[in-house]
Length: 256
Ligand code: 48F
Image (cartoon, rainbow, N blue to C red; front, side, top):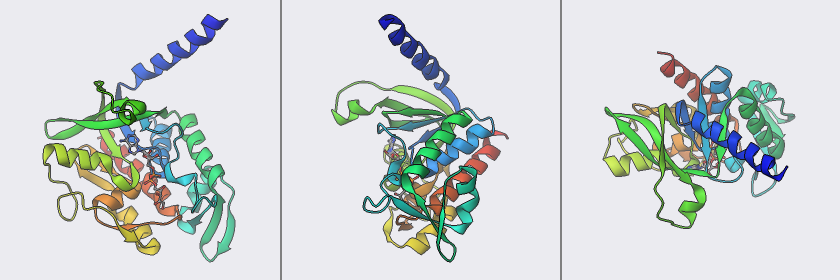
């Protein structure tokens, strides 16, 4: 019995691991925009893996605002909230309150149920570039990074990579720093986010959600970060709409 418990887990995990070594889409970061993108992509039959360095995907959604575990969404994002079966309470005109724990767990559940492979405790530390296009990521166990252990990573090849790493826009920064590449942003570089402005940031998140280098897309706060737009607050409609937009854009790209 003891042996079977261990073997079942190891067999199943490495089956999963082999499946994600070559995918259509690799998503870096399991915040709301990355999770929602993985859900829509998987639902449309795309082979998608999401890497999250923390134990639990969910990013900045669990904690609400200052750990008050409710968040706000605006009416534009309500169809997504309803599709995911998340309860919502009208609060003010065009604004709704949702429970951050219910919302985050629903995103994770729906992404996984739709067929996205969610890999937690794994960090993306580099990208793979071939023929002037990003076509993969370099991964390692998150604790290897934390402990600064000198352990070589492995490569996952992907037709498309999504930087959904939030405020730090880590993948875009790695691409720029290591390769001196010009990105599709207002300055050609990663600009970094500006201070908080909820209204402005909600709009620009959607506009900034795009391909910034062949094979590399950005969503959520990473999209605002690379383009030098404003930081957002605990209002999540923009994150959800960004995840939906990037999934549609990537669907077109991988189906071409
Ligand atoms: O920051 P995050 O929640 O991303 P998001 O989808 O949403 C932003 C909001 O939560 C919030 C906001 C709302 O208005 O402003 O901040 O843009 O989640 C990003 C996730 O990426 C993981 C990180 O642990 C977090 O869970 N992550 C970051 N870098 C890496 C990574 C990496 N190199 N490898 C793997 N995971």
